[in-house]
Length: 289
DNA sequence: AGGTTGACCTGGACGC
DNA sequence: TGCGTCCAGGTCAACC
Picture (tube, rainbow, N blue to C red):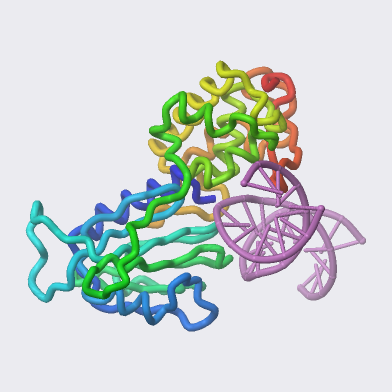
C-alpha cells in the first residue's frame, strides 16, 4: 500500500525524471474519473505548464507547476512562479509512472501527460481509490486557492511535544490514532503496525493512556521505521512500484505486518491478527504490552 | 466533536 | 474448470 515511504519514493523518482520538463498534452480516461476537479478543468490547468518540482506531503504527491511557456527548457536556478499544483493520491493501488511513449499502456490507465522531452507521466489505478486534483494558484484567474498541504503533521519531523499533544485525552486505540490523517499525515496500516511493534506497544491501548516515555519511544520507532523503509524503496506488499516500475524491499523487513501465525523475530511467539478501527492489525502478544 | 462503521472498487486467493 | 465468497485498505460520508 502506498504510505509515506512509498509516496516519498515515487515523488523523488518522478521529480528526478521530469523536473524542468514541460507538459504538452494531457489525456484523461473517460470512464468514471478519479478526479476531484473535473477532468477537463484539470487538463486545461496542466496544459503547457513547466514542471518546477515534485514532492510529497502526507500521502499526496504534489507537482508544482510554473507559468505557461513556449520556449526551451528553463535553465536551472531560474526563479519560477508557481501558478498551479497537480495533486496525486495513489489510494491503494495507484501508480504514477514515467515512461517512454511507446511503452504499452497498462489496463486501468486513467491519465497520460505527454512531456516536451518525449517522456510520459501515467497514472494507473485498478481499484480506483486514487485521486487526482488541480489547485489553481494563479492570481490572474481570480480564484487562486491556497497552496495544498496535508492536514496532519509530518511524522518525520514532528517533535516530542507536538507528538504527545496529538494523543492527549483521546480514547480511541493508538493504532487508530496513528491512521488518522488529520493528526499525522502519511502513516498507513503497515507502518502503524511496524512502529507499534518496535515501540513494544499493543495496538488496542487507548491513545490518551500511553505514558510520556511510551509516546516518545513510539515517535522514535515511527521515524526510524519510515526512514528505513524509504532507504529500501518502500514496501511492495500488493502491487506497489516506484516511478520506474521497480518494486521496493522493505516488505522483507516487516516484523508483524501480514505475518499472522509466523514466529516473532524477537521472541519466537506467534504473531496475532486482530481488527482495530476496522483495519487488520498485527502484533506480538509477548513483545507488545 | 470524538469516535465508529460501512461503502467504494477490483484482483487475487481460497473452497467446493 | 469454474463459480462464489471473502479479503485487502485510504478516505469519506453517515451515524451514534
